[in-house]
Structures are given as C-alpha cells and as structure tokens.
Length: 174
Figure 1 (cartoon, rainbow, N blue to C red):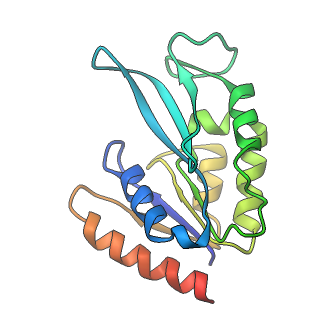
Figure 2 (cartoon, rainbow, N blue to C red):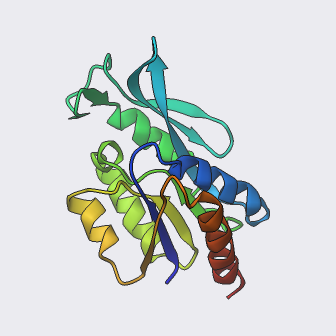
C-alpha cells in the first residue's frame, strides 16, 4: 500500500499537515502542489494552487470566465493543466508525491484525473488530501485496495503527524 489519503472536514488542517510532511521529507525531492483559499474582503472568492517551488496560479474564482465550474467558482482548466505540466512528476529523483487536493475543482480536468490514477499506480508513495465526501473519481480512489485513509480531526494533528511520518518513512525505506 503505497498511497496515503488524508481526509477530514473542510478547514480541519489537511493542507497544513501536508506542508509539514513535505518539509520532513524534503530530502526525497517531493513533487506536487498545495491549494489555498483566495480571500477578498474576508470572503472566500476562489482557490489558488502553489507547487513545491513556490509557483502559483488561480485554479478557481468567482470572477473567472470558464465553462467549467464547481459551486459559485469558475475553473481555469487550461491554466491548471499547463501548471500540471510544470510539476515535474516524472522526474527520476522524485521520491514521493504530495497532492492537495483531489477535489471537485481539480477533478474537472481529465488530465488531472488521468495523472492521479498514474500516480496511484506508480511505485512511489503518493500522499494526497481528499474531501470527506465525494463522488466519481474521489469515491473510486477512496475505495481502492492500495490506499490507506487517515482522518484528521481538530484534536488529532500531532498524533496524525507522528503516525504519518512513521508510515511514510517505512514506505520510502522499503
């Protein structure tokens, strides 16, 4: 079981946990991206993405023009797919992948969905966040035999960080 999924309610700290793991395992040259809310006047207006080198893009926003959407947000599929090209997920020296998150907006991209399945099937560990509820690809991934699901709550951050650190270290040293 090479794949680790971190799930939990929105705002519970999945991204922060993933960022801490990324720092702990930086010697393994991880590749992937993190998501963050775009706030305008204190309101959530969209979703941003940042790769591990610090490059950023706007994935979804209330003011974007696009035929793709999730809720009130329009999704920049082409920009996202161009961004994915630059993630260097096929690098030989990459030891593991961090994907935050396998969410509704991201899954609108066929390229992303295909890439996630490739990463899940790869021989290097994938550590990804998934929403606590989901349909389609999100649901399929949660049901895979080669996936271990870890639920993050407001009260188990330290415990999950220690647990995941040990589990990932074991995967990398196999």
